[in-house]
Length: 328
Image (cartoon, rainbow, N blue to C red):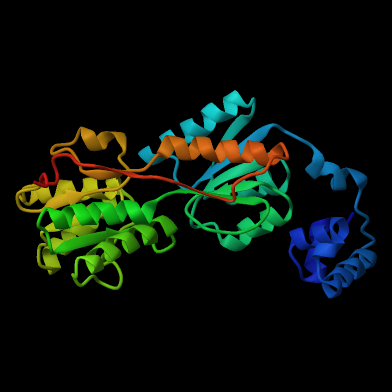
């Protein structure tokens, strides 16, 4: 028996487009709709009432799709989602979105009512495709517009601006930025804030990060070793997240470079270990728990038919500790 996947393949469209051709024909170009209908007729495919009704069914389950389940950032984010879900009587499924079947089984097969998504490796096209099927999704680390999409983030650019401005007020002029992944909007916004602060101070910033990691401690180690082997040692290093900053700190210590006496160090996120390392890490506090809680709150509002804010930006806060000198 033919399935909608077979029809989509013969018509040369995505499964979601084929589904829209049957269930929401006004949202599909007439030429495309005709192609889908002709393929269905050719394959003797008939959409069942049960298939049309799947999206109307409620599971009271929300998926949280993450690129990495191990990082300290994610534990607080997940806790925020979980606490709000408990309050609203929803269950939460945490999935590693690098698994190819995670999105397919949970979202395309209607096993959850909505999702919180934090993974820059999942393309915007996939996210929009899901939204086109009326799957409410809260995205973090990207800015997309669709009635079934809500974007929630911290104020990354202004947080990085304030951190860089602090380093400048402390007397530093040669401030190196250790960037994050190319695919991360958060990393790009933090670089913009850093660059804007240098420009406002009449300093010459680079057009792009000189060093770039992937938000892991290992990449902070790797890039700092490369820095010390091939470049002039800067006066200060601003890492795009705390995990990379911890890698920087480890290498500087191995090379007997004192922090902050020889090189000042700033991070971003304020993960829990940042206050316990020696020296304790100056950083920008991102409201990780609040991000998770707000993401879940917006999803519940959408599922309940209430109005939602399509774009929520939460403030960040500068936290000064021992890895940077005090500003007098």
